[in-house]
Length: 130
Image (tube, rainbow, N blue to C red; front, side):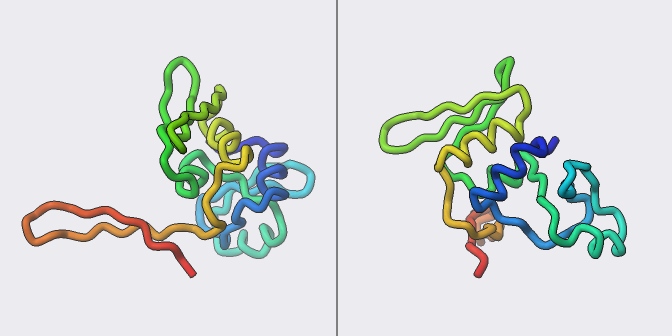
């Protein structure tokens, strides 16, 4: 699921990253019509419209969070020995509430890397894109 048109506009205005168009991303046009990129020709059509992020897209930009469902979607933001909670029926909207509240990382999309260690353990880390 992705955020509503109104939330997508608020995220866009607040500086949420508008990524390069890719297959199966959702985008709103200026009238709020939701479309999904399916073909290469769609890239031209989607130029200049508003990205409709999913919960996963938003969570990649938040750190120190716990995201779960307990009769309602919840995002817990852990910082400075406190926990801020954001709730919504829709998972993407719950994440957007956290991001819009000002709890956001610098506007860089992270690149996730997985490194195989010699003792067969895995190390997972984030590398910020330039």
